[in-house]
Amino acid sequence: MKKVEWLLPTMVAAGLLLASCSPTSDPGKGGEGAGENTSSSMKESVQQAEAQNTNAQKASAHVKQEAQGGTPETPEPPPEAQQDKWTSGDFNASRNADGALVAVPAGLKEDYFIDNGAVVELEGETLVMANVFSGDEGAVKVMLSRKPGEAEVKTVWSETITDTNNRRYNAFIRQLMVKLDETRVLFLEPEITNNGGKFHLSEFNARTGKVTRIREDFWPLLNDKYDYDYMYQYRWDSGRKKLFLQSYLGLVRVFDLQGGKDEAPERLFRVIPHSTTGIPSLFPSPDLERFVHDDESGKVTFYKMDGTPLGKIKLPADKYVPSEKVKWNPAGSIAWMESSPEGQGRIKDIDIDYLSIAPQRIDFYDKDGKALGSIRAEAGDDRALDIVSWLDASTALVKSYKFVPTGDDSYGIEEKEATYYAYNVLLKKKRRSPGGTEKEKAQVSKEQTKVIVGTKEIVFPED
Picture 1: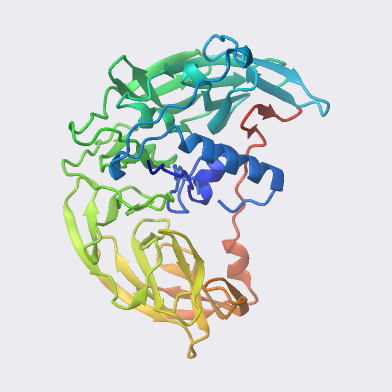
Picture 2: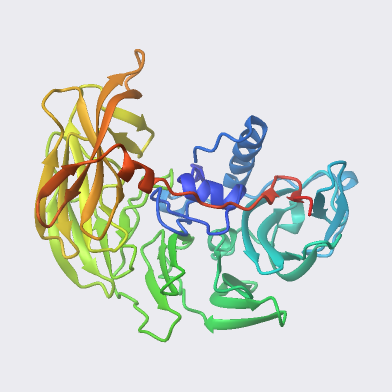
């Protein structure tokens, strides 16, 4: 059986295992919540990276690949001598030598592991959502609460799934938890039954301790042919209070939690079937008003969030286009696509279905897919350009550089002689960056929580 390997993008990997306050999914290496992400280049600790890799490999054994025609696998139960009964969701906590609070599942010994951690910092409280896998006990999803100065961790919500043949199993494993405000979090709440289950978009109020279902049973199973769907990516816009969801089999939902209109397209926008590394085939705009979908027809199509098709872009023939085919400015008003000639050592990084390049050309489009023009790298086969950031809704900060392939491998480059200029897409004008001022503006620092969700324990830093 081919298993799904959860090699999520940078934000998602960081969001799930060294969880940040706002998990990003972006299974597309960008955007808040990118599952999602999570995305995967953190170098803080070699030991933590190795632990995460082991964790991901173990977790993949618990996930069915229905799209590849796989069949369920159930892990071998542990020897009874190693496994104690435990009350689902309970954790014990104690201080380590460094003064940090370490939480472990109560009543379990060695045969368990913790996976898919998401962390949200509220005002005066830390919430952690994670899965605990333990032999015959199956998977338990927990939400833990810890208040500063307290030497205990409380379980404020939990749910269990013991049957890996349950058609909701894959969906159960994935996490979604984001911050609504200083007292509430939004999360995907599974309600598991013997033969299946329901999924609700729910809110947990840390002040009252209550769970409220905001959108009930919103995720129907599609039909008997497609069983094991799961949440592939999500985006959370904290300012607009909008949540975008896409499942692997193509269910798309946008929930407006400020009283606006929810969007629920009738047709499916399925993930490219061979995509296993977490790179999406659907690219939502940051304002969650548009998305672009790649159906592998040689074109990508712009859509309104209700599923209405707009403009199409033909992918350039005989050229490299990165796996993140369409990118957006923060305002959601301009999209762009990078391309470069094949060869010439322009591959920065590559995987089964992931490609990052040193672009020779960048084409711009409005939010409906209409062409707005393009820019090219300076003359020479060894020149490239990247969009570093956006200075306003129509002005991009562009980096121009010389690239040099590193070593004899087919990918990997070194950037040299970088210069910067500002380019107004609508006016088609550029100006040089004075002394790197715009470069400094582009540097954004994102705060990350210090809570570490490991394979055996959850560590809260010393107060």
